[in-house]
Image (cartoon, rainbow, N blue to C red):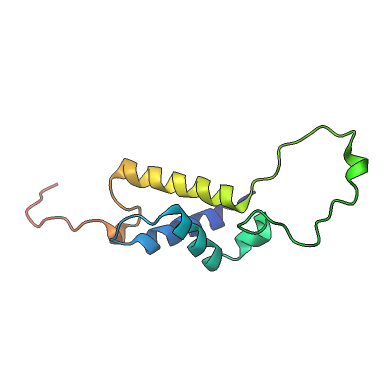
Length: 111
């Protein structure tokens, strides 16, 4: 499960990485997020879908009677989901989420 504070950090990093420029690509977002939030790999495993050496499947025979469950989300899937959420929010607003990157309001705008 992705903690809310990490999700907020991910969106904040994506916003700051984009700034006034064009939106970052998903592949760049993956690299930046993994580099700046190492806890993501601790929670979801490595970006390539691998897991740590501590997770071994020696007890495979004991699990044959259990129902098949959906596999846990991979880091790549989590980043992709957050990235798409962020892109959708930005496109709905038609401007960046962080106020500091909003376009400057014209001095003659009375709204």
